[in-house]
Image 1 (tube, helix red, strand yellow):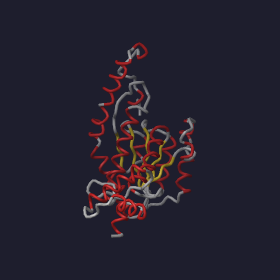
Image 2: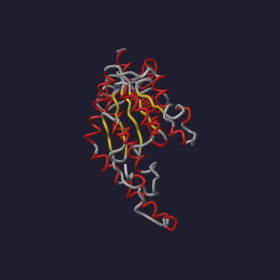
Image 3: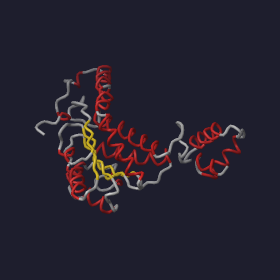
Image 4: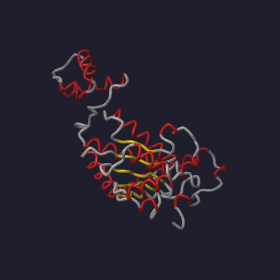
Length: 269
């Protein structure tokens, strides 16, 4: 890679001289380019999702490997998918430098660790039944690249989400997603457009896969965990909508709480 697009100078200069209105307008202008870039990458995203779906249907797992913004966003998705779709924490997992307990630390030097990512995967008994997806705006992060190289050497299916074309990480991916978001508003600050694209793609992957795995019915989260009052109320209303003969809110609430989810409550009928 002679020159990474994500490291090219911003299209804007003298940012410190701008007004608040100018800064926010220009950031918003750049942000609007993200969905367009994702749209261009949809065929590749769809292939990656199909590969993930197949692995999970057969009992395999999805591992995201990432550092910095991408790694943190991936970890967030692995947490949220559990509550939204009622999955356990093993189906989709994140590999982050030093372990996910290091998420709030700012020691980005660990991105250069070429041993830790593969060791974490070994500790989780990685196998050819699983799929490993590397996340890297630059497409060069050593922590991510090393993991994919080891996976390829051991016959493990790989994918990637990167924001530069023809990157080393993409060369190690069976399913490569290249989302070219261009230079950042603040030069090199890939937590902005690149990070936004990663977040949107994580949403696409987890939502599509869970729908395809039967965790959604109609358009409802019938397997969501009942972890707070809002979600309990939503579950009760979903149940009553799907089962109109039940009119007593409190009665349904007791049933929902006993069962643990809408789908489990319906199985008790």
